[in-house]
Length: 326
Image (cartoon, rainbow, N blue to C red; front, side):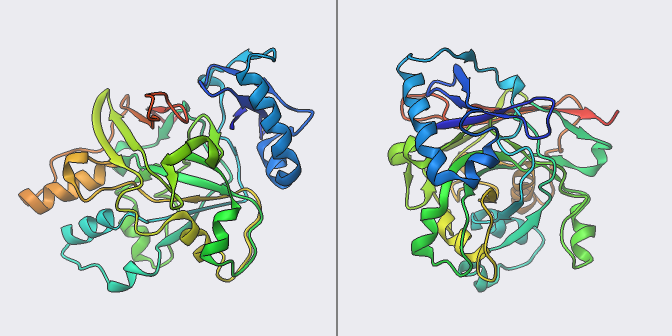
């Protein structure tokens, strides 16, 4: 099943069911007005949405054209956004570039932070930046949305709470982050609003690509129409999504609508390219002694997308342009 949120006069948009090919959509306000409402009653609502999805794919319903330029983030604002760093090849390279070893605890204890979730971007919304000197970077990630997760959930049971999957552009302002982290209190101004793929999908929609609580497909990243990376999101992921959820729920329950990100997708094989600019820069530092790739400038575009075995877009594309602050 594929779902999306269309922008409206309200803050949370309205929920639509989207067909498999991402061409047609139907509003389902009689079932659930918003995606959050659907998640709040998922056990009852999901089967009804599935019926609509099947009928839509069979051509049995009147539908509107699905226009990705009209989508909001699937959850335009969420109760919680927790982002991990599950690809340790990314972590190792960043630390190596500054002469630091990766602690052995990172192999068993996931990195995770709580980000701002009150204002997310739609897939085609601009990345608005006040100053390019802030070091504007994209980060291509996978994320899951949960239903209600009990405190202390085990890894074996955590997978039951994964209801939806999507792609993320977790925008970072790299030149702001070091000073913020040096304060010892985490990210804030270095992490502006993240953007999400046009649609979210249920795990069954992914077939064999969803296994081991990981998404085994290439994350294609284009920067200004040039392929920048095609890392396999299922490869080299140290912590699967069940482990990330279990970690997040160690000392508290998670509310329905919690979003948990994988962190920047990264492979040990450098031939697969990169999912963020900073990782390419740190590889340049390791290999050549200095970074040569600049961060994004006004007018730059990034496109993040994933395709199934038949070459069809699974989630639609995150396609954004960097613009100056009005």
